[in-house]
Amino acid sequence: MLNMIEYEQLHHVGLNVTDLAKSKEFYGSVLCLPELIRPPFDFEGAWYAAGNQQIHLLVLPESQTIRRDPFLSSREGHIALRVKSYENSLEWLKKHHIAVLEKPNSISGFAQLFVADPDGNLIELHVERSS
Image 1 (cartoon, helix red, strand yellow):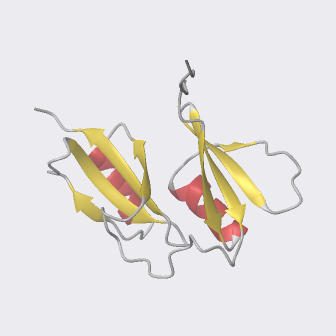
Image 2 (image 1 turned 135 degrees about the vertical axis):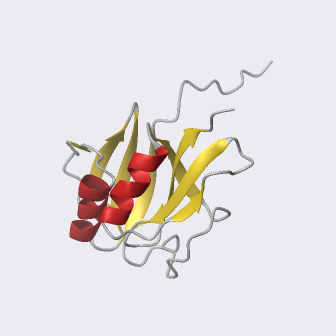
């Protein structure tokens, strides 16, 4: 009998970016994620903590996964991060002039905010909606 794959948790998500300085400003200063020490790979990038998981930025300007259109959509591929406050997160994003797709009453059960990083990678910020 074959053993099945057993998972412990999602460890990290790798996202391609084109401009590391712009991306670090967004993930560090706008999304307020703490930067982690990254091994000295032979290409540019940065690692960030998102709770017990990580986001790894990988500089690859010719990547096929970079969205050239920053259109905000909840149906495009994205990563989702749980935040403590919908209202505080929305206020912070607006203060930093970040375009936001607001879905406070999503049928998903989450109050959702969708934003795009400088390369169009979509990020959902959400809280469990009160019943």
